[in-house]
Length: 401
Ligand SMILES: NC(=O)c1ccc[n+]([C@@H]2O[C@H](COP(=O)([O-])OP(=O)(O)OC[C@H]3O[C@@H](n4cnc5c(N)ncnc54)[C@H](O)[C@@H]3O)[C@@H](O)[C@H]2O)c1
Image (cartoon, rainbow, N blue to C red; front, side):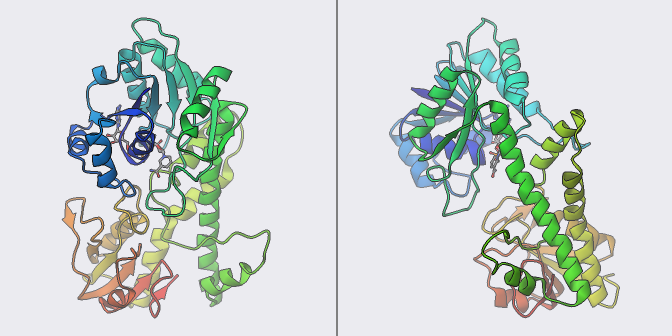
């Protein structure tokens, strides 16, 4: 069987290397630089080792391509392209539409199309299927299924194999084939009654995280106002063996999922006349954390950051990855600069970002820790500036949330 995976990013490349153990995989991506690099056996994704990529390439089980012709005889097409928000924060299905165009134009035989990209309930039935049919020159009867991806890049304990996978087909045949496909490299498959349930479950999982992160971020502000330690209070609450799940405060939420997916749910809720007040408010609270942090830093430094050198430590959106999408560091830097601070940042995992390079971890008036990678020594952070404000709870002896 030949598998075409459309999109070779975090999700698509991860699924490609797991599937390549059992199938011939063609990774289709419209970024020719990424494709050239992958064909040289160089992985650009944390958690996907270049050695495994090289192994599959040398055994003829994997290749990357920008050419639609290379996927024309695929038995299964997996969609793994971005689902961002538009400028006015509405669901942007432009990448999915382009993937549908590729599938419709090039896949000539009847295939199983599985969507792994995150989107709102109804996307498979009402958007993907009609779009592929629209772009198919000769009418081909494909099967359609959804299996939302749950991969957490950089995570060691859960991966494709041991993370339970939700799925549902538009037809029983599509469901069966989807189960057969994933059961090769995933231990636990959970079939739900409709694609819409699988799509909604994925969005709700991330909404649960977004709302709880906002709640703990607001609580951090309350704890500070009351003069008590938020961390000690959370640890105390966490001794309750049921009915509580610990989330920790931060500078906000980042990455491709938590800041974006709940807005997909809110959009479809509001379109259907249902309220999405928690999602909207959680989004506001998380975005406002950056202002709160800069205010606290300014207050501790005589109320004025004008001309002060501020080193932002860790600009990736979470530890041990180079991913800067929607990172809270961006807003923190923006507000610090608005206050007149001279801002540089240190993050050797990211290296270069927005035309700026990682600065040395030393010699600043103020350091603000947004993300602490395991490779960065907390003591070095503490000695990098006269004043250190930590938003991660990992730099003992600093000021912080
Ligand atoms: N990254 C995660 O942790 C994660 C986890 C679960 C679900 N998801 C979801 O999976 C989807 C993909 O996310 P990602 O993190 O892999 O994105 P990504 O940005 O890492 O990768 C997407 C890839 O798709 C390529 N691409 C864009 N348009 C294309 C097109 N028309 N044809 C072929 N390739 C195209 C891009 O060049 C890029 O290489 C999104 O819907 C996301 O929400 C992501």
